[in-house]
Image (cartoon, rainbow, N blue to C red; front, side):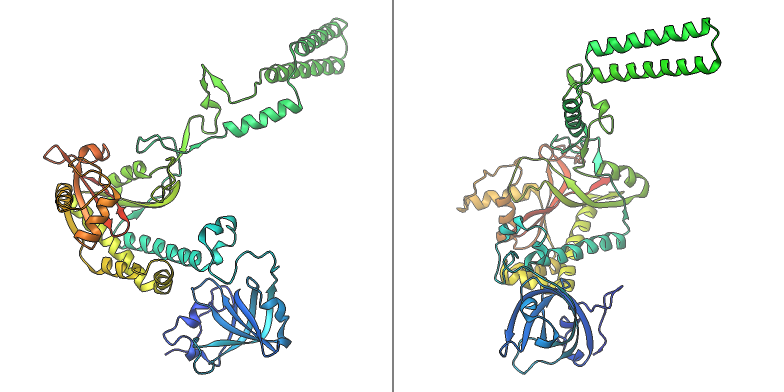
Length: 483
């Protein structure tokens, strides 16, 4: 067992995870010096305020490091407050027998204290309803749940890129702003500067009203007068300097009239042309949207690089507020050339298994937190998904199984017949009851899948597949295939 302590790169600080997530819980590091930083989760004074016990967390893991601060090292009244930011130097030591923690830090020097106003700090020591965190977005990452989510998402993002890189895929950056509606649904967020520009114009016109026709005509009379002045100077054979000055004044008057005429035409509101919005005056000179998919760009790359993928944010303007519809989410989109549906299903299954195994190997502490606080069976399901071959059935076989279940007394809210788009309750029945593991359903009716799916020889179904998992339903859909 090594006794060295991993430090944070570009810092003298030791991440708490490198102490307490060791197989020995950190006990093998007893006697070593360490500098740690983090935020106080809980704190209490002891022995008539002679010292304080603090639970410190730096976000590197879910667990806290207990530190002990004596009264002569700092203001214990400030240090024990939940939310206080601390950086301290100390020595790691073994706690008394019978204590939960395997190691603790005896503080020798308090380097930094970020004080907290206890009357205003909103995060309590006790469990906090997640809904309440919407009011404290800047602090929600300090909670156990959101911290675990952030660490897991980071690990899965890295694992995604590693899986596809090791599988021979090339990563392609696809645009977030696009002029095309990839899926043809029309439910896209529009990107425009017309509204903000219209608001600016309206405020400007209120503050500085446009010139009237009388103002413009008066300015034109000035041009006429100054033109006469130039003519008279030339007739009188005035000096070049005098004539040049008069010509310059004439030019200024003409430019002023042009500006006045242009400004007099300004109208509040979004610009119109032929009764429609004039997008030629927008930022991109045409309509633009947040992307719903990078698929169109990937298709062209797949037809040049063979196997490609993108991984980035996508946006859907569906007016639905259910947990299955998000306005913004990150989506993995692979594209493969010279592949069949079987290869597609192999890739999808391998990817899901790789991700599940990565969770088990790199995120077990956070998964144990979720199993304890939110979903007791989550680790078991992930383990099963990582180790068990997925079931594979055609859409027709899936409908037959659901129909048989109905005949045997199973009641679904959504009617079962060939041609329907499987509902969440149907998907969960297949994964949780019938097969009790992930299921890949393939060869869907062409009417319920996208127009670009390849038509099968039966002219009724298309080469499409969905990966269904217990308690969720669809987690992954068809990769596009090119031959």
